[in-house]
Image 1 (spheres, rainbow, N blue to C red):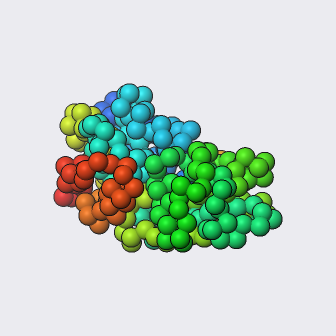
Image 2: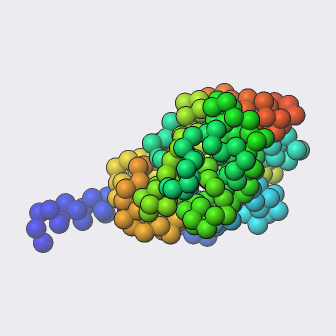
Image 3: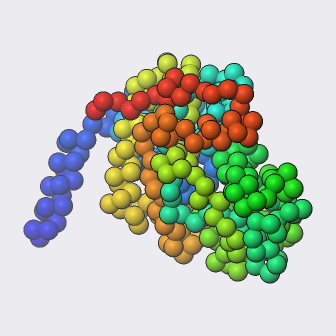
Length: 316
């Protein structure tokens, strides 16, 4: 055994002796609803690298058909935690549901490609060309929907002049190719895949209207579950912080998680930029922009008490 091997073995033994993994029988079981968007990487890495387990939570990720069903899954009890977009969660709270958010997935500005994808030979080149066209979004009232509508307004186009329909983001390229929609408000990894395959092209980055540091996705649970499981919430928050550190230090291993949870080919994943990782939520900084947009678009009737909605990170 050479000196390098000895050092490696010694380091592994030291980590094993000092890392407080929680006995499996003591862990809280959590089903986590997600959609296959690369911005949710911290949740996948925290699962794959055993970080949730280390902090007392057994997480089972479960793919949702689209973001619109995530809150319903949490409220029904089929899942304990979900990753909806902020606007979906705010609408649910405005409708009387008792929800709590305890972390962000990623934040803006994000280096991942996102924008309105149209057919490469469609003749659609700018926002005004979308008038009368069918535009797919992953969920009506969700982040990509309301942001795309705001982008249309900024380009002088009335969103009511566009036919907005729901599609699943993994269908971005296929839906355009089949003529089911004329455009998709998409994000990585699906926007890049559509462009790289030659099916589509980007005509505008609608995400440029988002205020910096706004959360892109949030970890949400019911108030009842949060009150009954404060240690599990704190454990997940600690695990997510460690996952962000792991991703920054180990991008190749992180990409393996992206490939696993999105089912995208390794060559596609290899070219994806790492998301701008999130973490602790701050009321105005993280969610203020979305609250303002939801009010302007009449998605909510009154401001949500963000301080009550957010569960702070543990002090240590």
